[in-house]
Image 1 (cartoon, rainbow, N blue to C red):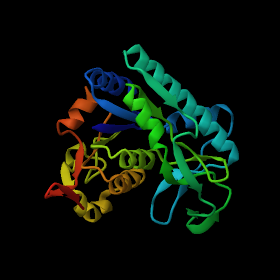
Image 2 (image 1 turned 90 degrees about the horizontal axis):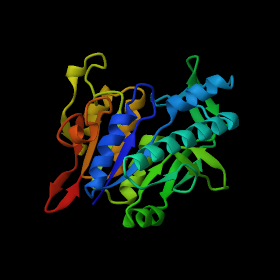
Image 3 (image 1 turned 120 degrees about the vertical axis):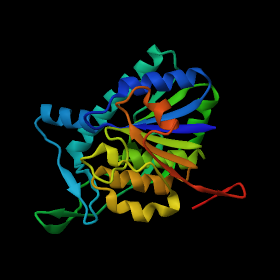
Length: 272
């Protein structure tokens, strides 16, 4: 079986521990696909070139990067750099990996009009180059996995008119997990999981069934809303939100750390 790991790209994530732990598991024969974000790297590059990042907040409270044409270029450059660093790190750890930082795995439809809230008013954004995921090139991923190569994927998609698009990394990981019929989707980020109180790590929600998701969505704010949406879309038996900053973060998450969202199993079939 194949599993998918999404490494958060925000500030405060620890990729080093996660990559070492992932490499250990791959060397023991496990098959993983690695998806990564690039938020912190893109923000840093945007500051360096004098074009700071701006955010969009939907009326429903979802937060995303405002991706005009110049921001798209900055984001793609940052994503490629992060991708190359991760591939190099895995290679050093004895894992053959293929960097897929371009729009060669994810297909998407450009969002031509995004409803957002600015200064308390709803506005339509029409110059954004972000996309809604429509498909995954599973044959490419399956071919790499079959010969023992770990795909490392950036959240950059190909649009219907040949344009590059920024897509949400959590939703990209969910789409890839669904397309590959993955056993597990693990998202490691700079938080312990879903918290009842964002200021209290001890308020962690340990586990619940996917069918119970609506009653937990009210706890989510900001980026956590997208992570719960990813859980809904992934269609995997086990979805985990956990902390990248702890020792052996992959092992810890698979052993019970973080928030586990399970699909119900009835007569051998998953039932939401």
